[in-house]
Image 1: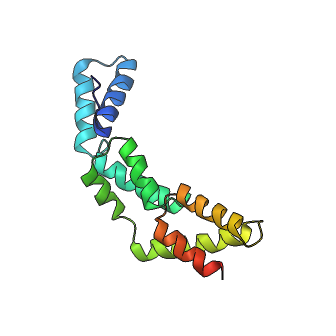
Image 2: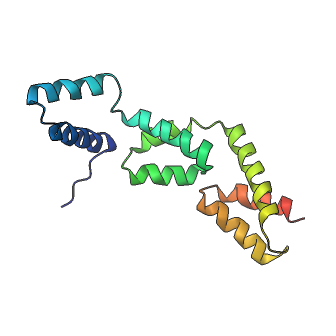
Image 3: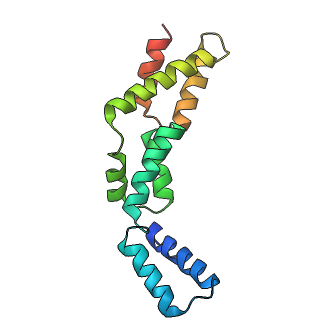
Amino acid sequence: MEYYCSYQERCYKEVEEKIFSYRVSSIEKEKILIHLIENNYINEERFAKSFTRGKHNYKSWGKLRIKNELKFRNISSKIIELALQEIDEEKYVSHFNSLAEKHWLNLKERKGPKKNKKFVDYFLRRGYESYLIYDKLQELDL
C-alpha cells in the first residue's frame, strides 16, 4: 500500500532532512520548523498560487496544464481552484489571443490541415481549453 503525502508534508520532510544534515540538535530543529510553519514559509496554498502565477505569466501555460501539474504535486482540489483564481479571465484570454496570433504567423506551413494541426497541438500541450483554441483557429484560418 502506497502512502501519498501532501506537498506540505513532503516539504516539511525535505526541510527536516536538510536541517538534520547540519547536525542541529532536536530542540533547535523543532524551533526552526515551527518558525517556518508559523511564518508561512511552508504553505501549500501559497505555493499553489505562486506556481500558478509564475507558470502562466512566464511560461504561458494554460489553466488545464497548471491544474494537472498541481494535481501531480498532490495539491488538494480546493487549493487548486483557489490558485486558478489568481489568473484574471480577461488577461488570460487576451494573453492567449496574442500568443496564438504570434504562433500562427511563426508557423512555416502553408494554410491547411497540417498548419491547423500544429497550431492546435501546440496549444493543447500548453494546457489551453479546446474551445479557445478552435475559436481562434477559425478566426485565423479565414
